[in-house]
Figure 1 (cartoon, rainbow, N blue to C red):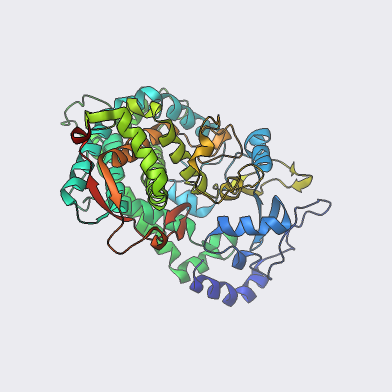
Figure 2: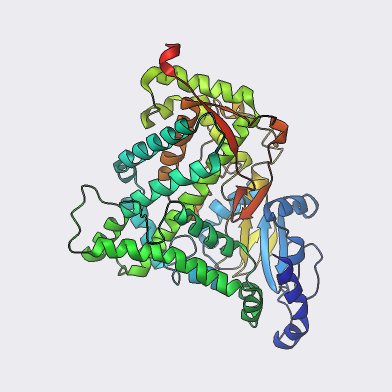
Length: 502
């Protein structure tokens, strides 16, 4: 929450006393979880901080693995251990898998026509099935292999041409993700007419910033719209959504053009339009449904995929021993072939362990988006009333010292001969969530992230800019639903010639 939002909240506190009728629902007869003392009107809002996953992890050391915060008058439960994560995501998943119908997500999800923010119900189950069977199944992901190979080759070539000058690796990664997802979803890269390189990534991140920033009507339904107007939040959300919607509208129009040549392969819009024409879905698919799914693809891939790669390269740069060991494994296996193919990845066990360890320390979603209970429930002996928001602090879960020795250290070896995987079945390790709300695009995400990072490590030795040491690498985070590296990763690429070392 920015300073202006805080000042407006205090300024409107007297107004809220007049508008808010009745006492805060404190669950008379309920045994509620422990809660840090808050302030009148705003509750614990002032305590959540700019990095809420860190804040919750710290508070849990004092108040326990299940805590109750109040955002204004709204009760919000946080859980922070593998045991409680399992309760929420598995044992009681059927009662805790809905989403709160908040005004901000409602607008950005085209009135709940997406996967991420839509409350549990018939449409959500139907679109989830479509994603599993049509969009993100292994066969569909494999059909986009040529896109990934072509764009990775272009990225490697552009980095080689820049050498030995320092490159902004964060920008290079964002650009290749932008292009891969554009071609996968839209069938092509849009340039010109405000669709220049990088604009899509920028639009996606603007939406994420809006979702993360304080929204008055999410917390104060009676008068939150006033706060949003005074802080400019409403205008920012409308502008961000308009910019993203332009991409989607243009792409859908192109696909509906009767003069468009028949593509050799279906992209994601082709699939959704085919399902719309076939009327095979139990719920009619509209243009807004298509846009909602596209929004999920881009928010889940462009941002989360890029940040996970930046963190992985950052940790490897900070740990030269690990970097050399990973590169030796990749280069020994691939030899002089000139590139890492996706078929090589499964044989690169230490490389995969290094990625897993990066996801443990820097989960793409360190604080899972709020679930909402659909009935009265219990957690750790505490009563959780119906319609309560629940967050799982994955950051705290994945650094639990009972499960992870030296949890704050980067040690990829902990994943060697370790059955823990990213599929959400081990509740001490949840980089992509678990249960009904697990990330539906894991297969596609891995197919993008793993070969990009592997080729960066195979094709180049990476050095820090002159005069810089590993201790100078900035590890500060920024939080926009995801945990981003606050500053770009600038490195010097030195091309590695495989043929010289045969």
